[in-house]
Image 1 (cartoon, rainbow, N blue to C red):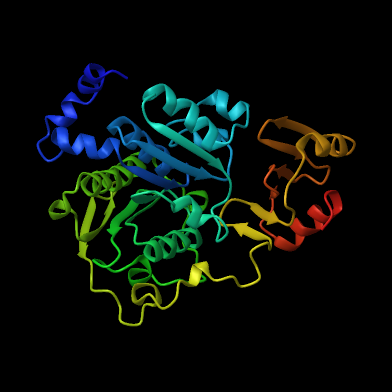
Image 2: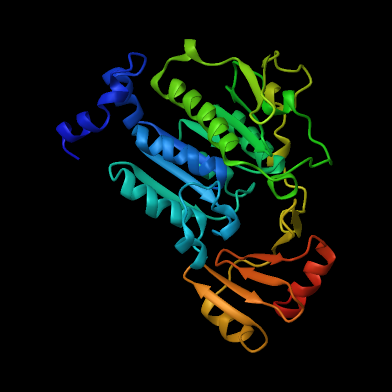
Length: 342
């Protein structure tokens, strides 16, 4: 894009004095990671790309379904019909919004194996996830590498957001302790799109403040709100807990291997169990095998088989498999062993 076109594209943004021409230059030289390209992630990516952040890397393990469309703003009915991975569909849409931004789409699960490489070279990480297991993973990796992490979450009509900066603020673990109680999710309590947009916008503006270097404007509070019941609350971030392993730098629990990395895991509220027991799947090979016993649909990114038992089996080239239609890990592993082998 020519300099004149660039100036015109961002003219209204640079007129805003806290950003200005110098801030716009800093944005163009910045790089961010978005983990999760669902409801929050699509709004975040849209803001980052339209604002002219130089490189936007994003990762998501899932594909577009019709139930996503009321709140996941980058996708449409064609994406759902084609079962397009969210990261790919997002890249296709965002590249048409701002061709000057470098987009890196990763179709994979964020895990202990790849989270640090995903953070390599980025200035900031944005939370677009839907579960605390991945949030703690992102939190721990960011604090280990000294990278600010912008947290956001939404369910029903409620949401919350905060920015955590290593060495300056507590981390997520200091505020929210790991618990076996998963709480409400969008798949159990529902969600309305406006709260998603609001929370992601809170996240995006904190990201912009950091990227342009306006640390004095950074919010030092956790915001919580309920847009349906008209509640709004801010809590000042406390000092880092003295016994926090992450803030002390003594341990990063989510980055420690515990021998269960390849185990079956139920995705809360999704009636889906994810299994990672293989290094890879050759989708053409598995289409030939599974077509003998199931109704199979494929695209270049995944294979979906409707099993005779009623569940659905989704295979990805990176070795992941989803068993949809059950939250019972024993049942899922039984079906996986029956059709794939353990």
